[in-house]
Image 1 (cartoon, helix red, strand yellow):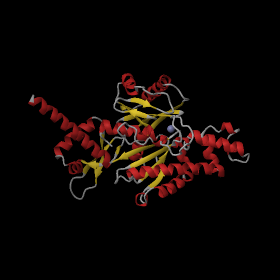
Image 2 (tube, helix red, strand yellow; image 1 turned 30 degrees about the horizontal axis):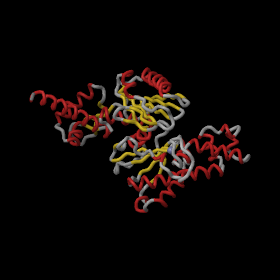
Image 3 (cartoon, rainbow, N blue to C red; image 1 turned 90 degrees about the horizontal axis):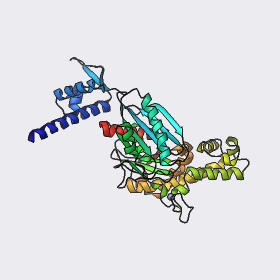
Image 4 (tube, protein in one colour; image 1 turned 120 degrees about the horizontal axis):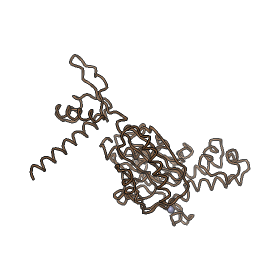
Length: 402
Ligand SMILES: [Zn+2]
């Protein structure tokens, strides 16, 4: 018995050392064996054994010599970016997007399918096809598959519990994918994934606080929250689901069944309806340049173009949405005191027209001490933010890299 435990402990500590050495090389970019030993406090021999195994596994390579001052020059090691890859899928409203992502979060290949609202079974067939295609074209060993989906996701059981925009409730996505692909599968809320993606691979992230909120504004509104460098999911995996908080007492009926939710004043549906109203009312509206008839205003892109063409009425509705979002951010800042807020999603393309009123209302609606150091900026990852986010989740869970 004691021998079995000793053996198990030895195997665990070997595994631990391997991960530690790999993560140290990954974080450093290029580093020598001696510096790994200094950073990790592992014995030189332990580091050399681990490095030899990582080179054998094709994860690490020698990339050159470190300039030395006199002694024998040390060999530098680096993680091979394409040693493994992950398959990421974003089940966005209107478009399923998949990608092959390398160990540095770069999307090496991207594929997307336009979808209209569809029940779980039909959606699943499309997802299978998308993943089949990506797997067939992956040239590097695949670490696993991650799926970012809207709504409440029970991550423990890999089940989509509830979505407002799609009828997928109760879909046991993880088991179904695991059975078909026999790879590690992760199912996560898309906004949680986006926040982790931006935190891990985004530009200019101040990692000294290790906190970040990514507000996604598109079909709906939700926030992804990273606290202490880890995604914060909440007790029931619903952290950041702010789209259905009542902001207009006695307001319009929401898709969720309540009235006056944030999504009744900020969402793609509302944006398009209000833009159509403007176009109907005003024959001079710039919207007419980009859509034949008011009812043809069916994409956010048309409204974005009208804004940048100088349509004042469009600017006003975007600013009003920014004000509502600013109030939501003030509440998040009041609750969490996170200073890095980034905005993602299709509507982030409105840029300053949306962000300026957000900043202003946040400053007016939360404690000055809290908001003075809080910055609202655009997310630096683009349309693949969820695909890159689920890749980060896989790299964290499967390899301990991020
Ligand atoms: Zn609602």
